[in-house]
Length: 152
Image (cartoon, rainbow, N blue to C red; front, side, top):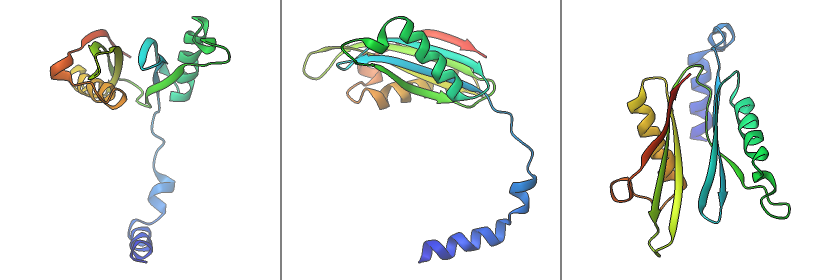
Protein backbone atom coordinates (compact mmCIF):
# COMPACT_ATOMS: atom_id res chain seq x y z
CA UNK A 1 0.00 0.00 0.00
CA UNK A 2 2.83 2.40 0.82
CA UNK A 3 4.33 1.79 -2.59
CA UNK A 4 1.10 2.78 -4.33
CA UNK A 5 0.81 5.99 -2.29
CA UNK A 6 4.42 6.92 -3.06
CA UNK A 7 3.92 6.11 -6.73
CA UNK A 8 0.84 8.33 -6.97
CA UNK A 9 2.64 11.14 -5.14
CA UNK A 10 5.55 10.91 -7.60
CA UNK A 11 3.18 11.11 -10.54
CA UNK A 12 1.44 14.17 -9.10
CA UNK A 13 4.69 15.95 -8.20
CA UNK A 14 6.50 15.18 -11.44
CA UNK A 15 3.56 15.61 -13.76
CA UNK A 16 3.33 14.16 -17.23
CA UNK A 17 3.96 17.31 -19.27
CA UNK A 18 7.72 17.11 -18.78
CA UNK A 19 7.93 13.55 -20.08
CA UNK A 20 5.88 14.40 -23.16
CA UNK A 21 7.76 17.56 -24.10
CA UNK A 22 11.30 16.35 -23.36
CA UNK A 23 13.57 16.39 -26.43
CA UNK A 24 14.50 13.03 -27.92
CA UNK A 25 17.87 11.81 -26.71
CA UNK A 26 20.38 10.75 -29.34
CA UNK A 27 20.84 7.01 -29.15
CA UNK A 28 23.67 4.84 -30.30
CA UNK A 29 24.63 1.27 -29.99
CA UNK A 30 27.50 -1.10 -29.40
CA UNK A 31 27.68 -4.75 -28.39
CA UNK A 32 30.23 -7.26 -27.20
CA UNK A 33 29.14 -10.85 -27.92
CA UNK A 34 31.08 -13.89 -26.69
CA UNK A 35 31.42 -17.45 -27.92
CA UNK A 36 31.45 -19.52 -24.71
CA UNK A 37 31.86 -23.24 -24.27
CA UNK A 38 32.17 -25.20 -21.02
CA UNK A 39 33.30 -22.25 -18.94
CA UNK A 40 35.76 -20.79 -21.45
CA UNK A 41 35.34 -17.83 -23.72
CA UNK A 42 36.65 -18.95 -27.10
CA UNK A 43 36.21 -15.77 -29.11
CA UNK A 44 34.41 -12.43 -29.12
CA UNK A 45 32.98 -9.91 -31.55
CA UNK A 46 32.76 -6.19 -30.84
CA UNK A 47 30.51 -4.01 -33.00
CA UNK A 48 30.26 -0.26 -32.40
CA UNK A 49 28.68 2.80 -33.96
CA UNK A 50 25.21 1.44 -34.69
CA UNK A 51 21.96 3.33 -34.16
CA UNK A 52 20.71 0.86 -31.52
CA UNK A 53 22.33 -1.82 -29.31
CA UNK A 54 20.16 -4.56 -30.84
CA UNK A 55 21.59 -3.80 -34.29
CA UNK A 56 25.11 -4.07 -32.89
CA UNK A 57 24.28 -7.32 -31.10
CA UNK A 58 22.80 -8.90 -34.23
CA UNK A 59 25.83 -7.91 -36.32
CA UNK A 60 28.25 -9.25 -33.69
CA UNK A 61 26.32 -12.53 -33.57
CA UNK A 62 26.54 -12.75 -37.37
CA UNK A 63 30.31 -12.23 -37.22
CA UNK A 64 30.64 -15.14 -34.78
CA UNK A 65 28.23 -17.25 -36.86
CA UNK A 66 30.50 -16.83 -39.89
CA UNK A 67 33.25 -18.36 -37.75
CA UNK A 68 31.01 -21.36 -37.01
CA UNK A 69 29.99 -20.58 -33.43
CA UNK A 70 26.25 -20.78 -34.22
CA UNK A 71 26.63 -24.53 -34.85
CA UNK A 72 29.48 -25.46 -32.53
CA UNK A 73 27.94 -28.85 -31.82
CA UNK A 74 24.81 -30.51 -33.14
CA UNK A 75 22.31 -27.65 -32.94
CA UNK A 76 24.39 -25.83 -30.30
CA UNK A 77 24.67 -22.06 -30.49
CA UNK A 78 27.34 -20.80 -28.09
CA UNK A 79 27.03 -17.07 -28.85
CA UNK A 80 26.10 -14.97 -25.83
CA UNK A 81 25.68 -11.17 -25.65
CA UNK A 82 27.75 -9.97 -22.73
CA UNK A 83 27.90 -6.18 -22.80
CA UNK A 84 25.64 -3.71 -24.59
CA UNK A 85 25.41 0.07 -24.53
CA UNK A 86 23.18 2.72 -26.04
CA UNK A 87 25.82 5.45 -25.88
CA UNK A 88 26.09 7.34 -29.19
CA UNK A 89 29.85 7.81 -28.61
CA UNK A 90 32.05 5.92 -26.17
CA UNK A 91 35.48 4.78 -25.12
CA UNK A 92 35.74 0.98 -25.30
CA UNK A 93 38.06 -1.50 -23.59
CA UNK A 94 38.09 -5.28 -24.04
CA UNK A 95 40.03 -7.35 -21.49
CA UNK A 96 41.17 -10.96 -21.52
CA UNK A 97 42.34 -13.07 -18.63
CA UNK A 98 43.80 -16.57 -18.70
CA UNK A 99 43.73 -18.07 -15.22
CA UNK A 100 43.17 -21.22 -13.18
CA UNK A 101 39.95 -21.92 -11.30
CA UNK A 102 39.96 -22.93 -7.64
CA UNK A 103 39.83 -26.55 -8.91
CA UNK A 104 42.93 -26.04 -11.06
CA UNK A 105 41.19 -25.84 -14.45
CA UNK A 106 42.48 -23.47 -17.10
CA UNK A 107 40.02 -20.72 -18.01
CA UNK A 108 39.91 -17.77 -20.35
CA UNK A 109 37.43 -14.97 -19.83
CA UNK A 110 36.75 -11.59 -21.43
CA UNK A 111 35.27 -8.34 -20.20
CA UNK A 112 33.97 -5.38 -22.20
CA UNK A 113 33.58 -1.85 -20.89
CA UNK A 114 31.96 1.22 -22.43
CA UNK A 115 32.17 4.76 -21.07
CA UNK A 116 31.30 8.23 -22.25
CA UNK A 117 33.89 9.66 -19.80
CA UNK A 118 37.18 8.08 -20.88
CA UNK A 119 39.36 4.99 -21.09
CA UNK A 120 39.88 4.73 -17.32
CA UNK A 121 36.13 4.45 -16.71
CA UNK A 122 35.82 1.99 -19.60
CA UNK A 123 38.56 -0.12 -18.00
CA UNK A 124 36.67 -0.24 -14.67
CA UNK A 125 33.49 -1.22 -16.52
CA UNK A 126 35.39 -3.99 -18.34
CA UNK A 127 36.79 -5.28 -15.04
CA UNK A 128 33.29 -5.33 -13.52
CA UNK A 129 31.93 -7.06 -16.64
CA UNK A 130 34.63 -9.73 -16.55
CA UNK A 131 34.07 -10.34 -12.84
CA UNK A 132 30.30 -10.58 -13.22
CA UNK A 133 30.67 -13.29 -15.88
CA UNK A 134 33.57 -15.17 -14.26
CA UNK A 135 32.70 -15.36 -10.58
CA UNK A 136 35.94 -17.04 -9.51
CA UNK A 137 38.13 -14.47 -11.26
CA UNK A 138 39.94 -11.93 -9.10
CA UNK A 139 41.69 -9.04 -10.89
CA UNK A 140 44.55 -8.68 -8.40
CA UNK A 141 45.20 -12.44 -8.27
CA UNK A 142 44.53 -13.54 -11.86
CA UNK A 143 45.43 -10.42 -13.83
CA UNK A 144 44.21 -9.30 -17.24
CA UNK A 145 45.44 -7.68 -20.39
CA UNK A 146 43.84 -5.11 -22.67
CA UNK A 147 43.28 -6.73 -26.06
CA UNK A 148 41.25 -3.97 -27.68
CA UNK A 149 41.02 -0.26 -26.99
CA UNK A 150 38.96 1.91 -29.28
CA UNK A 151 36.62 4.87 -29.45
CA UNK A 152 33.55 5.44 -31.58
